[in-house]
Length: 334
Ligand code: PEP
Ligand code: MN
Image 1 (cartoon, protein in one colour):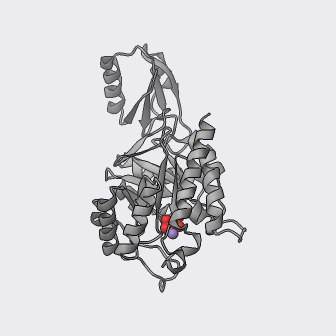
Image 2: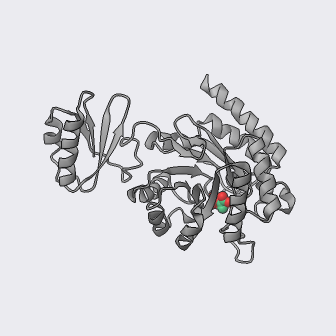
Image 3: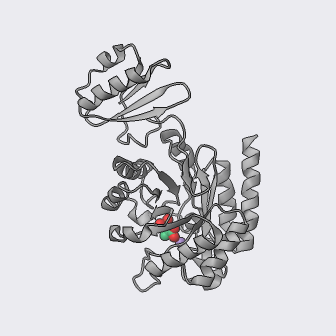
């Protein structure tokens, strides 16, 4: 349920109402918009008398929120969420370019790629240390050592880092990781999501390959229900009958998610297409569709990459792409 307060409501009146709502066993989320303050009420609202609430002097209107996702619902927060990660901002008109290799392989590789993507204008460096591979015989990532190397690249370049967590027991290792990624395969690992909700890190949740947008939002809700509002959503393609691409990029998700939620939406055309030459057109399309950021796999030697080389751009290709994305963003801003 949401209660929209009238513009001239005093702090004291607001506090008084919030106190009463809390005494009814509800959690109250406050969103201060330009004109209105929106109180988002979470919990069992069935016993709340809507007409009584509506009749209060300071209440403009009351609406029941029928969707099962509440805290990530735009009705709770009409304004876009802006998430600050180091010097980078994402959401609310701030665009973040996240780039780097699928996996951290060694010191020189990650530092070289980090410097290259920074030079190209990337805002954050990605790199997997714990890799969720379909085959147990494939490279599983450098794990803790991979995170150490990523931190070294962060120190050298100043870029905030993004890395995937697979197991909740590894959380301590992610202390200095700026954005914790929940991969497509863990999109509905509810224990993991709940635990990440107890941190104050930015959490990037990738859409599961067979998850609806409602399910993705419910995953975000798990994190937010624990008190962590710093959630970034990532469209990375879903599985369809098509086989020429690794997945099918559902670009309409950007528009739908922007309508349903105030959380920033990033698009990953690398995992969506699985083919390096398709990454550029899909990245530009995502920027044109109004995505709040892109996640692009970049490798200094894609042919010898230990993971996802076929979809990785070379640094020069990424540089050109980053410039093209800027031009698209300028064009749609006009
Ligand atoms: C990744 O980002 O390297 C990754 C494994 O992505 P996804 O979870 O989308 O498959
Ligand atoms: Mn990958």
